[in-house]
Length: 229
Image 1: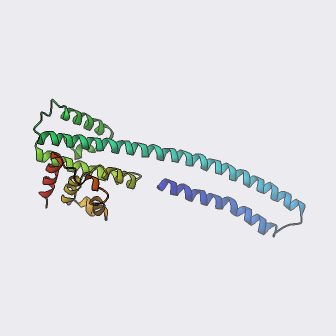
Image 2 (image 1 turned 180 degrees about the horizontal axis):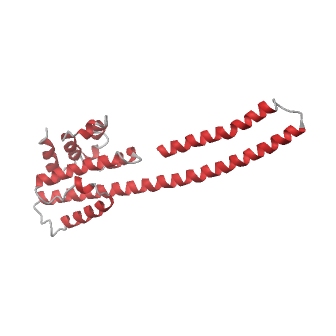
């Protein structure tokens, strides 16, 4: 993190400033080991003053590092919580697609109501979500398109977090083969800007457990992806 790097450089620079006068005093003004008691007395007073300043500064750095560390933990916890909420929203959207393909009554199953409530709660925290994601209950093709857009939106969010690798692995473990294929098929510029990410996304070995898990919703998502090929 940039904050930690800045703190590291400040610490090193400050230590140099504190130690340099001590070295100069010892070698220049006393010219090595002095036999003069008064010189050593002056040196002891100087060393004591420098040491006190050094320990005070070290205490300040420790407190500052603790505050920064606590802030990093808080940010990480909030990021993970928001990501899990988005993944839950994605799952509810897929449930909606499944209900549509099975010709179930969406309102009696409360799929739409639960989805809208969650989307509203997310929009309070992340105002950008409403410009990228719309309610899914218009047409099936539109709903699948929104579903793929939501996946892309989550990818974009992950790349802005403090721990991209951790959250990316978490999210990819939730995506079926149809989900990944559909998103890649759209060939948006987002993937062109992330070198090597597409290969990771389509890795067969890491997601082999999901390969044969096909639902009606997966079929619709897969067919939608093929329309871009």
